[in-house]
Length: 252
Image 1 (cartoon, rainbow, N blue to C red):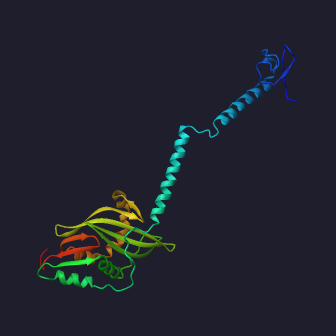
Image 2 (tube, rainbow, N blue to C red):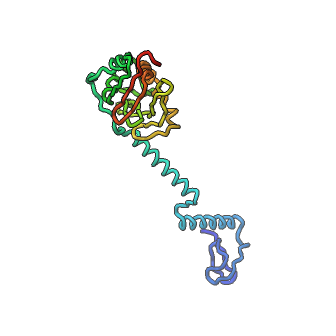
């Protein structure tokens, strides 16, 4: 049987944690309690306080807890959204084609650069991507380690060229791209990094400086094509096409 604290006035047996008699209201002489029992009573009061606090605030959350939970929710939401965007195919990706290109772009470029007068050449995305596919057959182009390289392609928007790559991760297509503004300066092809993309997720130019290395090997596989572009007098990139104006042969 649990220890009781007997009231000196009425003899009623009270719970050891009480200060006043439950029967008559007289103040109890708590010195009659053994020290151990007093300690137990103190523990019981503390436990009761915690229990009441938990009942009045079930979550037990303070401002820091709420902010931490909010940050966690936002972080995972952003991460999931980014993963979803990366898995999506970007808009405007040219369709794959196994047909030979309708135009021999390399031959046209070579003939135009050997002309004694300037020549204007207009190529569509399909023309350029057909030539790009043939050019990459000369190389062992590959993408990010762990990914299977499938193809490279170019997209043209006003003033901007997107150099894209399609790779496969366990058979699932993954698209990435880097955007450059292209121009002719000091007699050579000049490019300015504008940013890029992973799937449909846009990548800021500062971050793209580190991801641009993914396209270095592909770019190095096209040295001959870049040399031909260095012979241009002007380059005008428009929606879906590029206009090249050659220098007269023998000029720098």
